[in-house]
Length: 309
Image 1 (spheres, one colour):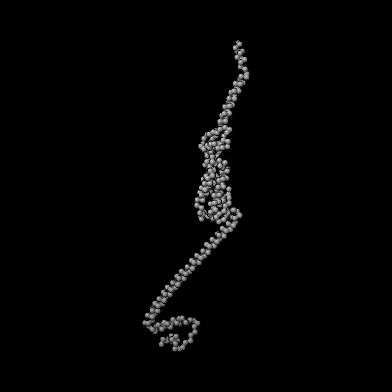
Image 2 (cartoon, helix red, strand yellow):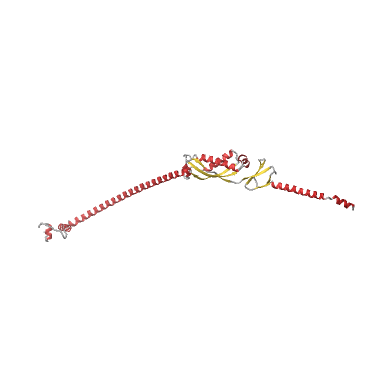
């Protein structure tokens, strides 16, 4: 009985509270540790870089996809894209070799090659794009400044060749020289326009040039038509002259042949020939209204009166 009384007195209410408090604190500490560990784990996704900084300085760059970690409260993590990005360069005016102003609008496809250099020298994606745009404008201005306006806008007469490739390579040389950790994979011109105040003047000049070209074609066409007509007329005249000469020759040959036949026929009877010629003359000279006064001894009178002597 005395032992039981002693045991009851030894298990005071405060001891139970202390026991549960220790368990609660332990659990809380474990939860905090787990939460701290979990909150400092991060996942590297496909197509991105994870930049680990310590007091603002880059201490590690995670490039492979997977789970990684950082030191709590000391290190921070930022993300940079690993895939190719498109930057639409702001349109800008340049002067051509023949001193004409034009508006150039282009875009660039670029990527981050070395995140640590990019962070150290460009600081951010926005700054990297701004630096890249300045280089692109500088190179394009230098390249197009060596070409005339017509060579730029006319693909048929253009001498640009690999213009886009030359611009890309020159820009990459500048980016590599200054160690910005980025590179351009492609540069393309979307359009090349004249400043608005120059468009009307150029349109008028183009219309004038087209009208001049059209007039040249019309003049050339008229000259060709006149030449063809002249050649045709000449050929026709030559053909007519040849046909006329051939006809005259044939007619002369026919008349000669007829005369020959007449001579052969009439030489057989001279008196008959005289009679025939006389009758032919009657047919030619006498009609219903003809009045003839003839001497009595004329051949006509003798024939009309029925005498042949």
